[in-house]
Length: 152
Ligand code: CTP
Ligand code: ZN
Image (cartoon, rainbow, N blue to C red; front, top):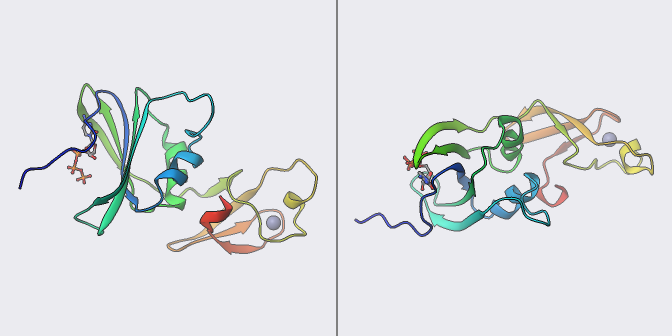
């Protein structure tokens, strides 16, 4: 069977592969790549048949090597994603995402009385207390919660 590329290979940049199907746009959001004005050329491929899980999404970011710390935020939505750093048209590095120990300024706390939900300008901060499925514990009020994609 001929392997067809729906979106061409990139010369330099970052390819996030094996994203849980349906999560590509959330991945762009948590990486801040959906900001206006845009900063990079980004290709998004959704619902691609995959060998490992039945379908996956792929995000290709040209001419930018994202930092490990930024990329580990992806583990919240997509624990099986792989990060490929492309240099000169070749995969120069391949990493699996790793759940961060802390999640800062990304999820919001479910506790309506938490200080992060008041008018105080406090960033949210959670410890990751379980990895799969991921459970977060608010550093301020101690509330434990699952990662809820709608709240990211
Ligand atoms: N890729 C790309 N541009 C390149 C090289 C690779 O866009 N110049 C993409 C591929 O399309 C693929 C990902 O980067 O989505 C990883 O490439 P590669 O390691 O060659 O693919 P696989 O061996 O299939 O990866 P894995 O084993 O991680 O599934
Ligand atoms: Zn809280």
